[in-house]
Length: 386
Image 1: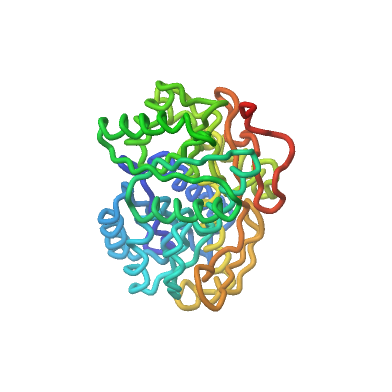
Image 2 (image 1 turned 90 degrees about the vertical axis):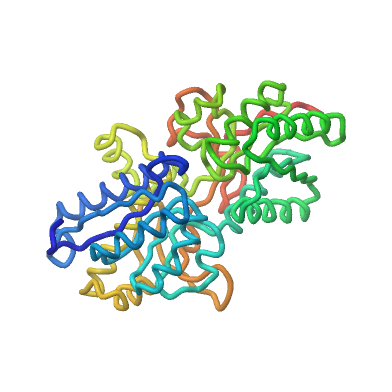
């Protein structure tokens, strides 16, 4: 390790049970940013070094990763995809006084604690999942069923969607599920019995861990004829963003609406440049998670240059005032007197997209709903009449 470098402590899931493709997109987005910034002279005359630790989607592993990175003298923490991991590590990072640029995790509590060293690029769950509910209403769904595991992330997300749909007069049913095959089959049979009701279930939200019980639920639903246009699957957490990773369900990721924190048809000039370079460097199209990783390093480099130092207090002060044109828009961190909007980018692009054909790349995904502009009028989920 170069002792003269500025060290970024990257965090994200690279292996199961974490969503490993998301961790690799985070890491590769950060790697590309580090390489490009170093190619133009680095930061404060020093090269950046990325030290990335696998959190496996497990809180305890995330805490151990933080301690390991503190032991090698990192100057900042960045990344993490899984909300339950980010929620577990923020207090430990706060005690270190080092800044944390939370790139992808969305659970409200990450910023609702209002910690002085924690800044977030991703939108809070309460905002993004409300947008998802608006999309469901705009496409005519009448009975939304959540197949839900019991953990803080899914519980909070289900409450957000339920409250929004209730206000709009849409029926919402929550069915508990665990990873056992018997339980999964029973859950789908319960949905089948509800098909005689009016309105019948017309979309099943997969609020459960990937790969299990997510894959078994998807397989069982399709086996019992719960497929479009009569009944859709929905994945607000975005596991189907990288559709090639969904083959284990013996089906496909079409058309499964998911949240995306970028509009692929409206990237910034920086975003267009990075998309091309990411594909050339890593041999695949970047998802929105890769842009989140890239932006986190870009913001850190800019604030260090502005502050003239890597001193944690000075960096945090600079972050509170910074305005950086990233890959998806101009990044600024807002703080409201109370609540979740604390040192939070308000707001990154938030939209709902879906794949409509095999091998469709992420930048080509169909735009179903946009938080800023509503229904774009080009893509629509095909619904069964009546």
